[in-house]
Image (tube, rainbow, N blue to C red; front, side, top):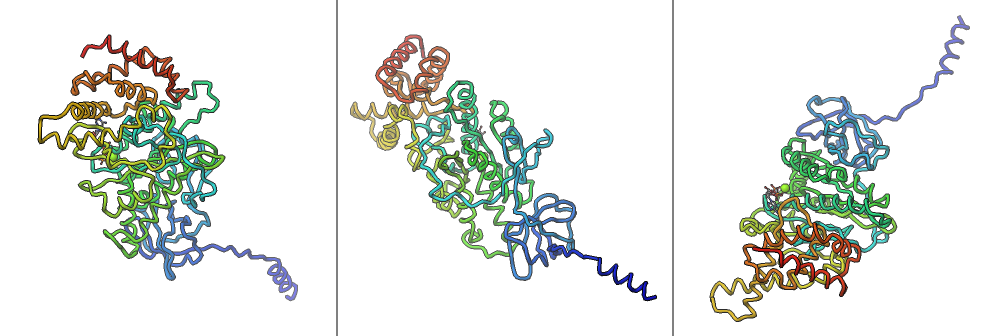
Length: 508
Ligand SMILES: Nc1ncnc2c1ncn2[C@@H]1O[C@H](COP(=O)(O)OP(=O)(O)OP(=O)(O)O)[C@@H](O)[C@H]1O
Ligand SMILES: [Mg+2]
């Protein structure tokens, strides 16, 4: 008997139970992609939590008795009482060049049906923005290919420039044009044997848009041959607010990988108005107190910690951000627009009136600014476009007065005529960005008065003819302007001769 007891005691002594610290909880309530969870006392802010069936949550509200989580993925199977586990990991997404040409969701999972993405690294979705010491001043240009922007509101690598305007004023088109232009420049640059050439990779984050819009955008990028340099992160209106809330941070993480690894990237957030609305929805369900315009009090912090991540890093690469904001009836003094204006380094303001008058892109010259980009502008553009902003401002003022009296002195008249032609020259169809050397040539021709004898209504056609002339016949000259990026006496003479040659062959 005693031996049996001894044996049992020995067995018990040998038994070692390893205590595993596992923090679990249960869903108390669940609605609209947001769950309140009991337990989970050790969860971190922004930690991933695991729901049954594979859905992932992010802990956002840490309270004494419960934890508020937003849920990414399929929520339809989840119910009250389900067990939830902490993972000890902050939310991260796959990063790297393997994502180029792909469409992914807010978690970096492919949604384009082109198979799995072979990426080896992940980056946390939320990161502390680089500090001032790590940053370098912005002095390399990022060409949008849009003449009105590159010549008057230039953007530099590492800058944050807001695109703001009412519904349907061409905001997305400007961003897509910029992405297409990067692809065009990349192709030329990578084919040349310029060892110093730095390609720009693009990330387009679609937030709360209709899926059909995203499909159209992807198709436009593909048609322009820009998809291979672009990553699309899509959280559409059909996705729950949690995905829309996370998507821009995921996109930023994907962009940071390029920056940290010595490359240049561009990120478009289309748009942050819908992002703020998604966040408001989440916050209302989490019962956070709401402030101005019913947005939660920390919505400013939400956008600033996102946009601060755009930077040019010393010894590394850069991340340029183009956030988009939709205004209501041109009201830039609403809460979200004023916030984002104050966070960015300038804005491209699009006006409905201009758009309806057929002035597209509908860039308002008076209200648009770039606070840091001019140090990134190339010398050639400064030489031909330095006075443009002033000339256009003067034109608007004079045009307003000229309505009242037809008898104008010769100087005013010529200023008006010139202004009207500049407005026409800046018209540019969607998805056809112009290389900077071509923009410089056209502006040179304008400054030298080559468009003055042409009827204002025919300037668009004349400029198109001149562009074709330069691209098909003056390739060497364009290349020279691009590589020297400044106009010397010799180039100016060649440009003038080329313009004369075009003029002799052009009949309006
Ligand atoms: N430069 C342009 N020339 C001609 N048409 C343009 C130009 N830019 C935009 N459009 C047209 O205007 C319409 C609206 O453009 P877009 O979708 O870019 O605007 P948006 O401000 O992003 O709109 P939303 O507020 O719906 O997002 C589109 O049909 C587009 O083709
Ligand atoms: Mg849009």
